[in-house]
Length: 375
Ligand code: ADP
Ligand code: MG
View 1: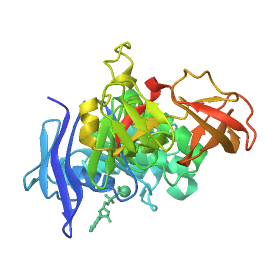
View 2: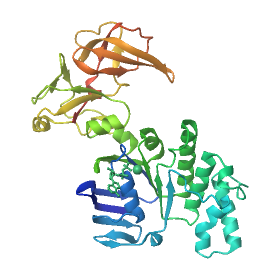
View 3: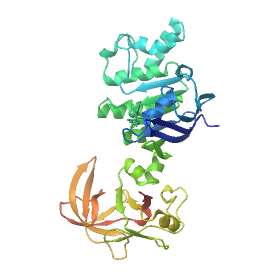
View 4: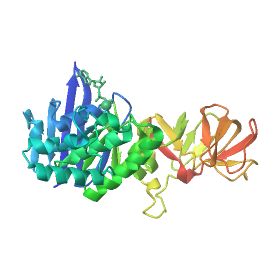
């Protein structure tokens, strides 16, 4: 039996379904992110888990407790959760130690037990000796660590985080998320993290649930989502992707997707690649192509696009001629946008040579790196 189970969870506001029949299972100790653009229903799902919003229908169980079943709602205080929010929500009039010890005090633990637990938690979040300070005497990152310590004080069965880093600056955000993942893994915490930031989701999560307008698009590991996105929405939300809209698809084996001016091919036959190569699973079969009725895009990741300064040999498949439109040097590599006639937007690539604006180039999309996706 999975540690956490959500079935057909649904929430409707004013006749608008904002969370639509969400299914999810999680194992103990797993960290999962809910990822999607603003308004897609992430917070609503988290708050239904917390018992702060009552679902319209569905089922939620965590460990041996049923949180919600068809109208039957377990009160928040009986769910044994830890929660961390964007604004930290520390009590300003309480010291760090009083903030962290608050939940234990409610449970009528002795002062001695509380004091030692608070000190232990402060050490865990790298703030030993900070117990006597007030929140306003701490930096944003330190306040967020206190909020995490407070959420962990009562050893929750599930930790819920809603955009916990969004009020921190970029550098601090990057350090904090790595620090917290290590802490959660060390303590074997089961956590659900809400974010609209794909990098954060990739760094922090064992698995990611991608949401769009309340509907789950895909659930998978960061690598699965990157290599095997199920549609163009997931492909463009996780990492960078180039899309080639296909005008016409030939459903015969050999598979031709005709873009503006070039026929693109991708492997149609049973892949002869090692099973660990995830990239080739879920290839669209000719039948599916017919079924999709042309509503598809061919996708190739920028790091898979090969860019040549001289034309490749005639037998090389999937070559598009273009010119360099724009180029920048970021994080040790050239990021180059290539203009291809009939193709918008421009194609993102990472050339090994130093590119010049307006230079003629040839893009090669290796068939094995191309995916056909609905959307
Ligand atoms: P996210 O956290 O992904 O940004 P939310 O879960 O907060 O999104 O909201 C999902 C959708 O539900 C949004 O369109 C939002 O406007 C709507 N919504 C949230 N709460 C309410 C409410 N109390 N009444 C009506 N609509 C709401
Ligand atoms: Mg939200």
